[in-house]
View 1 (cartoon, rainbow, N blue to C red):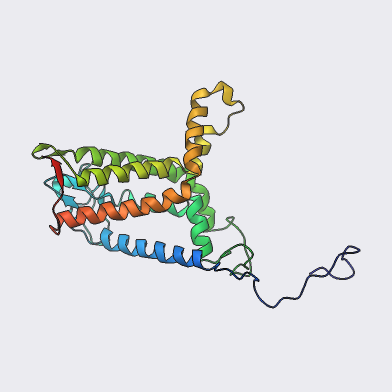
View 2 (cartoon, rainbow, N blue to C red; view 1 turned 45 degrees about the vertical axis):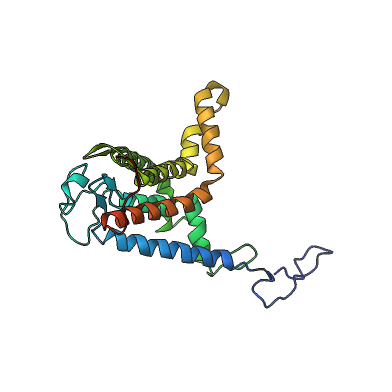
Length: 268
């Protein structure tokens, strides 16, 4: 608070308000929904990743993205498109080569930072609401210093998206030949959404259009930057949509693999 001695002439002293905030709207609702949504998704994903079952539909070559690529010696041979070279210990996910990078890509994502900073850390929970911590050092210290590695995790996420695309293509070639079913549509939609989320990343936008003095001299990069910029505006929505498509794809593959339901086939 500005003291009387240092206060500019004519300025009024700030009111002594005991309340933390004067906001009367439900400012706490958005952080609460974020906590519930992210917690539910993490709980589901954790259970599925360590379930080590119902991840592959042999009849239609459906592989859930939670197990792609399947690289432990516990994986079914037909589901291990890149070999089985890791031990099949329970604590090791079958997609151990990709899941850590996907997790780090999402954790360091600019939108997800905002989401869990505000909801889990209350830093701050909303505009005009005090921070839940007495001090704030930004992202200049460990472990938040690692957020600066986001651009490198983007490269890994792009490679993983290529692998998911390959899985979706292989699913059209079942043991009976070419086939097409509801599972193929779900896999394709998930891949498209994953690509949209990945390339809408702020780091991708900077990689494509950054370090240029004149867009007129790089028309191809300008068009690509314009396209990515349009997706970037929807980065938050795509972040949540892909959580939904990932869970839906995994659940559908699990349901078909466990024979809870039958895949709706259109061709073969």
